[in-house]
Image: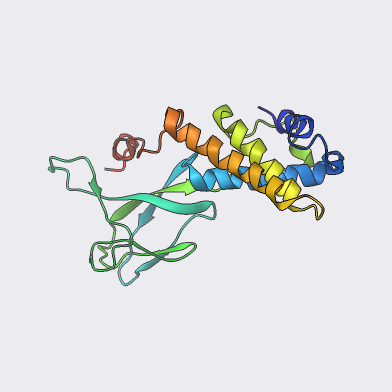
Length: 204
């Protein structure tokens, strides 16, 4: 769906009784916040970055669009019987573990110069504005219900005279819609065969 279609749905449903429905900039801001929440909750878009290890270097910077790491893989010898070797993440007592030391950096304690580490991460969503109304929004249509519920929640939380209970209803609707997605299996939370993805893309 385009951003314009989502804005129209929001203004004709969750925001219908609110005057701010005419403030397109604010409505788009709430849509952006809702999309961000869904990207936090579901691995909607995953990407891969390959870190080339250097001697004496243990801290590496992640791409700007990295929200959080979901998997990491080490190279394996050509004669190995396995395609890829998964690495632990944030296991404090494991010397092979890759550790997130800041929001955009990882520490790789044991390095072999010239070796490569594949990092699979969930990416941040695109942020939309008034110039983006004709663009397709990078969100599965199955997530439209929780998105609109979250827009309603943010909109009503910004209005002083809205009863607290009514605002909580919108957030509860958001939670229910997200749980329904999980229950019906319309969006998989598994690793999406990430090891196959790494090997198929020629990592080894």
